[in-house]
Image (spheres, rainbow, N blue to C red):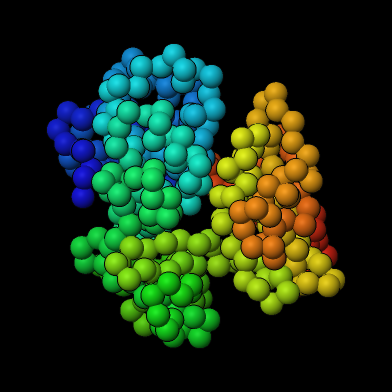
Length: 325
């Protein structure tokens, strides 16, 4: 892999230390002899200042952090020339955000996919595969690392029929955890036989590239169709007035679930619900288009930058026995 990591490299560590992206990335820096620059919190203005003042060279970021850096006004005046590589992962990167980042940051980009349970990265999409003219490849999280095996399985644990079919990603590797501490039931559910079931939905193409659709639990079932929020979020992100977006399923008496989008507008822009729905209709299948849009000031996120969709769902599913309809 093209880590661009080695003795003396100036490495940014800004993820929480309780997360593999924080503790694990810091250990990668120590192991390779790099100089770790550790931040307790991710504050875009502080990170940009350190990039310029400390001449940071390698950064590990989640997509939300890339987005926040791009939106920070200070980025226009920041000298970014020291950066050699930005590694990103932990959540799907909207293609439009990645395109913007490729224009702004004068460096290579490398996507990795993995979980804390897999001790970090199990796939890698190198800088050479980050071609803005190939938007489909930009959606991939890359090919398998050495010693990693992956299966795509259906709801019964059987391999899907062919490349391109969506299912749950299961992993077998020496990197996989032995189990959750003092949680035997959770361990049995996650590790079946020798395979760790990630809870992520995705598919493998004919060339061995892995694509993540979404978390299995975030899938929306509307009128019998499976809908993955990440695809809709990617489409909405293309609108020039959209700064941030999250999509969930809400109860619907006719269709079971309906698609609802939560959108943060860019500063000093105007955008109506009807305009955004019409915009989406030109880009995705009709059954995937949001039935409703709510404009909010900010999306709820955890310390690693992941959107807390359970907080968005809560008002709609409160009082129901199940979080599906």
